[in-house]
Image (tube, rainbow over all chains, first blue to last red; front, top):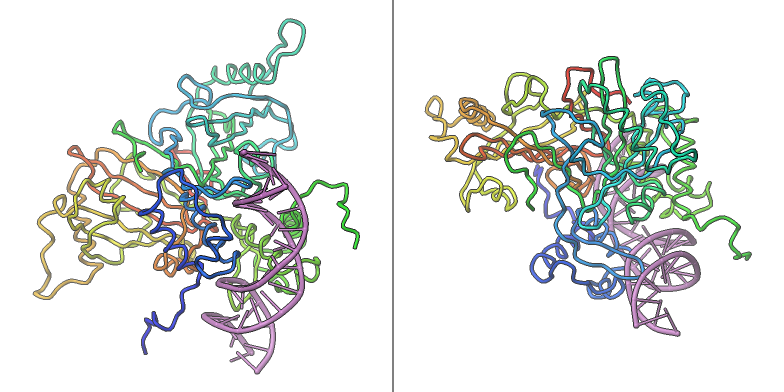
Length: 251
Length: 251
DNA sequence: AAGTGGTCTAGACCACACG
DNA sequence: GTGTGGTCTAGACCACTTA
């Protein structure tokens, strides 16, 4: 009869272990402190190392721990709030004054299929600007901003007779973009796993969990640009602040 | 045994396996189709089952697969876009007309510490409204909306001499809330893992990855309510649509 | 060189869904 | 009952960091 069979359902070991460790982190460890290594922790709790690791993985996913190969497992600081732009406020172009992103490079490529669909370019090449974002010296996000060549045309001229650096070309493209009136934007957020290159830029291993923010920038005639931003899910809390009030950043 | 490394980079087996499976899903499988079971797949690729499972976990995290105990592994449909931003206007109270949430229950509890901090209630009890959200019959999110008792006071009267149901009490609280002018709101999004109760409501196992949206509703005198919404990360793409243009929902 | 976390194996048993 | 995915074990070796 009883639909509540709490006694008869054994809780997985790794799940119980996770709560025990979580409580221990709250009460017995300080931020940055190094935990005992995995082999010792497993022995101390009387489980196999793989089981212990399952618990650690969960805690790392929740931003409680940070593990680094060759170094050890440390207690992570609270997640940092990262502003992702005004939700209801005025729209701003990427690279506008006050933008938290750092423009790094530029190339012309054919965008991945989902982006091409949003931009409504067939198989045409687009400008791809690589940008990055750091907080307190730590990399928190990397971004590729796709702009169709027919939106920013003609492409910016070369400088001084020899080609400008990637970052310079990227800034030139942004300047062209800023000349257009921005009519609106929308965003989506979803969970992803870091591809090899993004992982390297974020100082994580491939497959690390990331929050993928896709921003579409609209002008009157349609979509003028799409940004795909990849945030470290373990260290970031994305903040969408509508109001003038203090944002919801505190831990 | 030829243990000499091939000329390839030391790419982990599960990572390579994931890309192979991902390509196969694109080209050889239809949505909803059942994959061979894990033991057979592992044998087919010549790896241990644990290694195969590591690849499947990644694909499930990315929303490509859906695994159900006792049933099997199926090809997941594309993620559904779930509107999170203001759709009818700049700011709207929860439970306003057009709200996609279904109000289910009400209780009075002491909120968890992070919520209490946002609401700036000490150890006081608050209204806690449980709400849920479904798409095409599938549960996609569950939410608890916390409202301090001093914001909505006096508590709504009992009906007919015997106490109203939880859902009825919850709706009464919302009606009181709607009488106040909403001055603003902000939101954060972060990765979490489903606690036991949320997991049950979302038809997932405990620890499943979820996107946690924390919304703060502001009135002139401060924070009037905080909603903690838990979305299935495997099946949802959160959509923040600012403009009147068609939202960014398509796959 | 030593110590850490990351990957991988080849088993075993368990909880659950379904016929 | 049969078959599925979920948990767990006790090892082994690899890649990386640090000293």
